Length: 184
Image 1 (cartoon, rainbow, N blue to C red):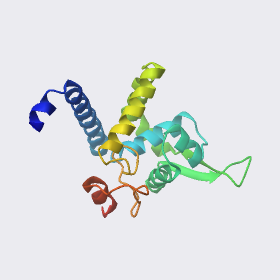
Image 2: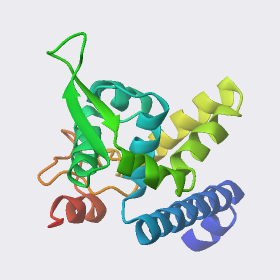
Image 3: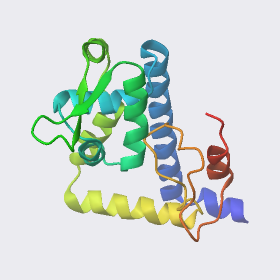
C-alpha cells in the first residue's frame, strides 16, 4: 500500500528527480575540477571569489561564499599550502589579515572552468523573491522532516572538519556519522 501511495505523488517524484539531477551535475563538475586542476570545487569557488575582489579577510570570504567562517578558513588554509593564496597583514590595519591570489593561483584560474557554485547562485537569482523564499523554506523543512536537519553544512563536496558535531538535539544519520569519522 505504501508503495502505491508513493508512486502516486508526482511532486515527490519531481523533487527527487530534480535533487538527483542536481547531485549528479554537482558531482560531475567537482570530479572534473579535481581531476584536471588537482583542487576541490570548493577551493576553485573560494579562489575565484577572492580573485574577483582581492584583499578580503576570511570573514569577508565567508559572507561572499555564503558559508561559515570555519569552513572557509579550512579551504583557505588548503589554498595557502598549495601556493595559490597568500595571507598578509592589511596595510591600513595590521590587526587584520587579508588574502590575495598568487601568480600561481591566477594561472590556475585562467585555465579553470567557472565554479559550479557560481552557476547555482546565478540560477537561484533568476527566481522571483517569493520563489527563492519558498524553495529555501521548503528545502529546510524537507531536511528536518527527513532527519537530516543536523547534518553540518560545508561547502559543496568538501569534507567537514574532523570532530565537527551535529547541531544539538539532532539525531545522527548514517551520512553525517560517516562524514564525521572520515580520516581525511
